[in-house]
Structures are given as C-alpha cells and as structure tokens.
Length: 168
Image 1 (cartoon, rainbow, N blue to C red):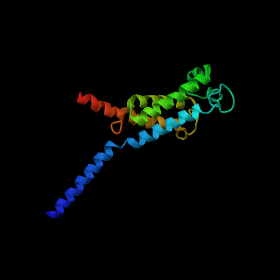
Image 2 (cartoon, rainbow, N blue to C red):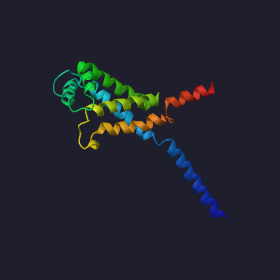
Image 3 (cartoon, rainbow, N blue to C red):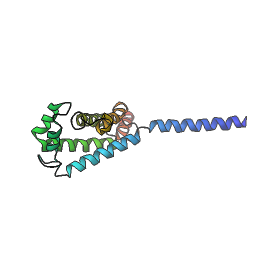
Image 4 (spheres, rainbow, N blue to C red):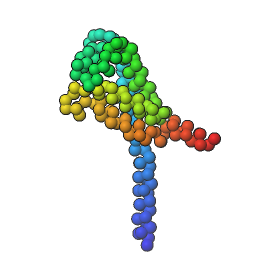
C-alpha cells in the first residue's frame, strides 16, 4: 500500500510540474521575440546608414534591390516613397512590439504587429531567398502565431490588469 502512495505522490508532483510547464510554455518564445524585436528596432534606429534614403546599407537601396523579386512590389513602392520615414516606422514598430511583448501588455495586439512586420518583410525583402526555409522572416511570422492565438497569460501586465478588473 505504501508503494502505491509513493507512486501516486510522484504522479501528482509530475502532474503539477506539467501544469506549470504548460502555463509557462510560451514564455521563452515571448522573451525571445520581445528581446529580438527590441534589439532589431534599436539597431535600426542607431544605424544612420539604414535610415538614409540612399547608399550602402540603406533601406532605400535594399528596397530598390528587392523590388523586382518581391511578392508584392506595390509594398516596396510604398517604402520607396520615403525610405527614411519607412525606416523609422519599421524601427519604432519593432521597438513597440518588442517592449509590449516583453511586458505582456496588449500581447495579442503586439503579436499581430510582430506578425505583420514579419509578413511584410517576408513578402518583400526575403521573398527571393531559395530555398524558402533559409529566409528568417517566414520563421518569425510563424513564431508570432502562437502568441497571437494565446496571448500572454503568465508574468504579464495583461494578466495583472485582468485580475484587477475581476477584483472590482
């Protein structure tokens, strides 16, 4: 009888661990995407070459280089109307998405923003990468989808705000 109790106790502990692991399963993805997008946004904002209309390493040159091979040339044309402004928009968008993802604030909206940024980059900049799985923007797009579907249920401002609303 005693061995059965010990086995039941182990199963119970394992079940508790599985429940905790399940609740926290998206946290590493959230941290990775949040940190990556904050870094990408800051990297672009501090790179004067990227924010220039023309020149080596500029967004303008990149867009001109991928225009004819992108899936949506019209999207590239939008960026080419004002490469510096578009560069700031992408940079600030990445920064906002990254910070919101790390904080778990409006997590689904942040994930939607991250997915849209990744989708636009995939359809423009990395569309011509062959084979397709070598382009990282598609992988980022797929990584955003679980967070878009599930939100940030643990260690997040969204959860804190929801609990506060329930208490009222």
